Length: 459
Image (tube, rainbow, N blue to C red; front, side, top):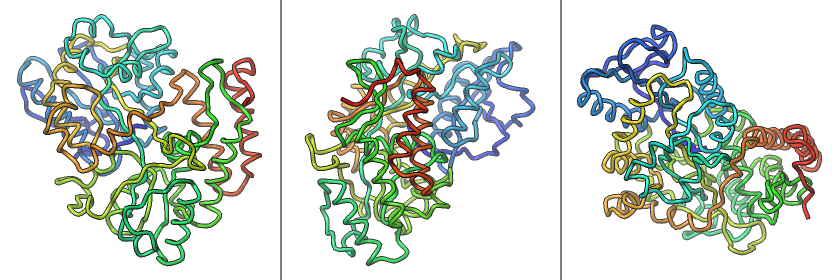
């Protein structure tokens, strides 16, 4: 979930149309959807959320390059204004009809298999096989866009890892001088309790929970806890979803402790779908937050020219690895995800869409984007460039985590499973259920989603 923050510099009801390299904002309603058979128009949709402009600027630049090289083609950039789950819903609704389907869509790899199963996407192996650049992608990132039929349905843009961002000055005032590296969950709670006691008005820690934050809750929040226990969501050996796990209950208990002791955000903020924007654009820059379990990309919010530009960010904020529950080997937890560019099955201009992908994924364009958005490259040629390696004080730290990373079970039922996780975390966060009761409700939801035969009790 992948999880970057972006909002272009025009209204939520506008698209950006580029002809011959020139850009013109066009009312979204005037297009009557995305798809059209009249003229050569290529339409590209993407998520618009928050105050950042990184994706908008990147696409505008690429679209200008493309339309200048192809003056007979109009490129329309279609922002879908939505946070997390709402974006997936809007994207799927548009892809479901030939009248509204765009030619290229911004697709989270965690939902790709579900969208393939629903018939929304088309395979692109015949294009990838002829594309020399495909060999530069790390194999593990290629499998992220591969469905259960063995075919590929997208081109990965980036991957990511997660850790604990923390304000070293605030932690030092609370009695934890740099470098700070917790070994267990209890170490995190100890630091958070000290912040609460000594620094009134500062939020000790943000770990996403609740339905409003969508996949951020599942991935940055709950699963960063769960995968630090000996439990798992899905048993790869038996190909079944795991129920009744101790780690599931322990992870919910950790969330309950954080909110019961008021170590996390106020409930109103925790239930706000714009919480991630608040964290990166307000709380961290203004010294209102001590720690946050979050992704590598949030540093992009503070770069030069960004909406929340903060030149001192990397002097003030430091990084710690997320520990396992009791310090078990390997001693850290991180999860990886990422987004891709995919073609809807009902796209009217698939050939143009692929040409745009080739332009967009050129080495310089992708290097520029990876640097601007603080992302981890999915390609060897870009990762080897000194410009990329020296682009950020954090890129080395987050890249090093990849060797110990875990990927979500990217199976067709996962989006529904993820929603059940979000419901469970919210119920313990607001105090409506105990961790045990919430876990029991989760188990029942999983059985409803996949069938009892596709589940197993934790061994």
